[in-house]
Image 1 (cartoon, rainbow, N blue to C red):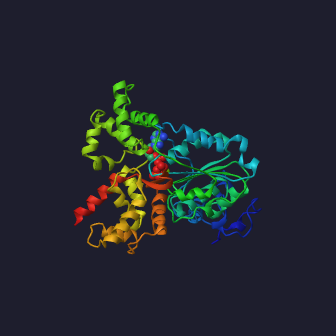
Image 2: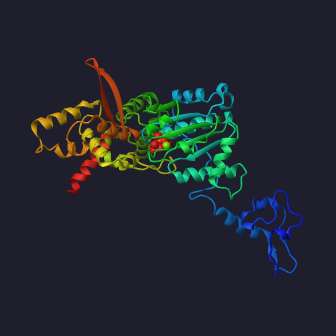
Image 3: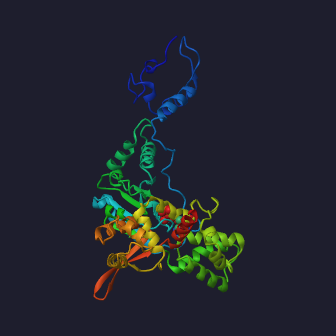
Length: 432
Ligand SMILES: Nc1ncnc2c1ncn2[C@@H]1O[C@H](COP(=O)(O)OP(=O)(O)OP(=O)(O)O)[C@@H](O)[C@H]1O
Ligand SMILES: [Mg+2]
């Protein structure tokens, strides 16, 4: 029986070398465009489309794990997108037409960081969609794992006509070499264990936006911004956009919405959840009472996909970060959660340890907690405290604000997820 191979095609097709093993032949579909069935003398009927299908299957086995065709397409912006004018303006100015990366021969990176659910991805998407005509190519890289980053580069390679048998680095190299105004959104680059630097195309052109919970990524660029809670006006609007869809809100309803939005600290994810709950249960007037009584249930609610693609509840969002913390950091947060969430002076811990040592307080209830956060040494050590605070900040679960007081600076810690941690504490107490 005749075996079919590249030699059977005579003359060779342009761009296809002789003796190339068949599974490596690229672009087979284009090569046989228009062909359907043909017979090779002495061979059974050979169906080109079947053959192409099986070869393409083989070739696509080289795709990195997690690859999905077109995975680097931009996702949609929420139809309820509200506000964020200042940061959108800042992004527009930074990536302005006057200072194109190819003009100034500089790779431009903007790091947008902040707590989970605050609205980083939505804001970045809004910017990319609004200003997409400024850029030659627009890609989204799911940066939550090395695997998905590699799979995304593979998709970029395919999108730019490189063959399916290329490796993911082909996409990476394509971006570095093509001096164009492409823009990439590295979205959700939250994992502090991933070193993102080597995954950014090394070039003197190109535009990059990074969104991350990890504030240490601001070191990647001179341009970064912490995305915080919404301004009250926008926060109320976002709540109302979700809560009331069939009429213009009355003045009374707006007042109610103001109270609710303030209670939720104008935190985007919580506002979306509250708004959709209010809409579902028609309970704008009684929402605050329900929240007081059933905080755990309401904050653990997930949204139907039809309302929003963000699939996590408020608490589940914070839980992802919480679970990444080591025991020292978790204990530190547990202690902070028992205090008022605003402005916890760092020196409080120093004083607690000083008192502990003075009173030899091994019998104190605080003893096990203080032991953990000092690695059992029970003495104040700035470097240990710095490390704990830095780690928790890298997940944006606390803010630290330096304030001048009594002619010296104090670091105050602002905790963002106090109620959630109190729930975790009460859960773990129930386990005893
Ligand atoms: N400006 C906004 N207008 C309307 N909805 C918003 C806005 N910002 C955020 N949201 C909504 O809040 C939720 C969280 O937003 P987003 O995914 O942007 O947060 P994130 O900061 O990227 O969170 P994570 O760190 O978990 O990735 C989504 O439901 C999103 O639709
Ligand atoms: Mg995000």
